[in-house]
Length: 255
Image (cartoon, rainbow, N blue to C red; front, side):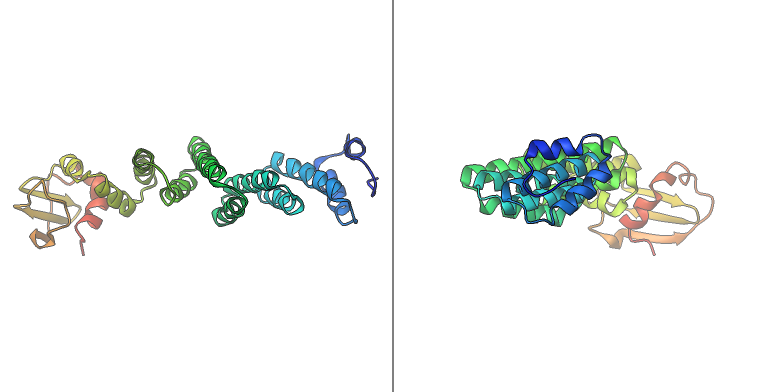
């Protein structure tokens, strides 16, 4: 049984052979005792390790936060606040991750702040990659959108936007796809795909769009006055453009 005055080696020995949840229970109750700071720090690190291995990232993050509070060393505080942020990123709790980063930054000098920023950016990228491999695309989108809010290079921003464009397409998030496509200068390609020229009728079921004298070099959506929406039947383009119907409905403000 764990008790006050035990060394780390004795604590480790006492926990051998016990299941993870039994260990969590014993260590949590042990923390309620009036323990020396050095033993308290060891206990929360053991708990943090167990929680992380069980993918209980929120609880693991709390343990690293506790360690940072118990610690008097700037380097230890930075290390464990940064680890806390990483775990909150894995848990999808970005606001808490931001708070942990802020706590780390307050303990750091200029060089260390730069290192923290690079580490956090890497945590987000790696977690987004995990989500993409697991086909958890909506989660990956959240991370990439979050990364666009951070201080990243123009090249990184371009790369992330391209990843988002692909994910928006796969998720059927048409509005976001179109807005991002425009920011990447992609309207000309979209026009080419849809075969829209100076005068073409695009049909979807009983609706068609009469596209009159619309300059293909111009961004679609700038001139809604040239678009006429009419009832129609049996138009040959319907099937070939069916896959774009959601795009056109949003694109041309069909009512």
